[in-house]
Image (cartoon, rainbow, N blue to C red; front, side, top):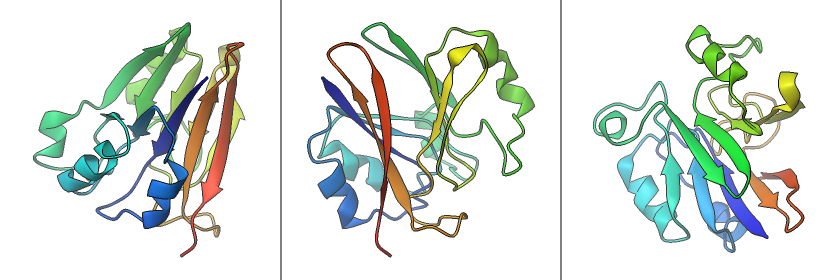
Length: 162
């Protein structure tokens, strides 16, 4: 079994609760809008980090991290990106090309709204919401992805107290 902590839209802040929730993860995936490079170093204390830059990440983050990243684990393919859907759940034109790829899941941020949905071609779409500023009226949140030994994906949300 593998566990991945999924976080997005930290905007320069990191709650201590993240360390508790991610305590036993094998990796951490950050879906952009990190806000400060030192946050990645803090997350690396827990586990190795895969990261993409978001629309508010400037220098040096966007020189270090790509806009999209393809991650392979076992027989699964994931796309990690910041912008996939906008707040109206329209797909950004720059990422439409990825819908024809054979991904098992697309992990994204940007909307600050936690979401899990099935899409076309059996692709799962997961947004962990914002770890600092939710726009849904719910508390900030992060996600966990578990890949079971029998090769099933299980996503879950963890809400942070304000």
